Length: 121
Image 1 (tube, rainbow, N blue to C red):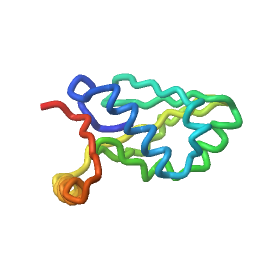
Image 2: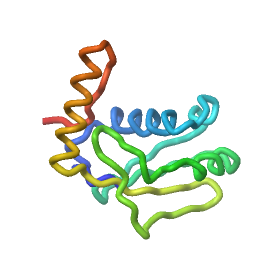
Image 3: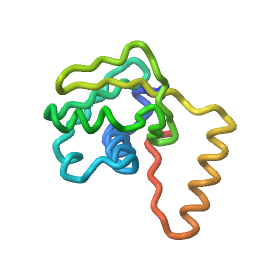
């Protein structure tokens, strides 16, 4: 799960952040188009659904390193897997990590990159 406030995050932006994270970890575009991303409460629990062969490739990714909208995966024993399901939990970054992420985002913006934040204030 992600230790993010469920009602304080733009869900569409968060889903796109999950998709971007999977892309950055090496999941092919054709596989990304076949992955459905669901969000539910429990901080934010992400549910990935896809055909079995795609989920096999998703399971090979280092999902414990996934960062979405500044929130990192929080490993838990609640990970549920099946032929087409993988649920992960992600936690809120520490204050120090948020400062580093903010500095990196500002640096990226200054060189022309686009960063989207999923946390609404």
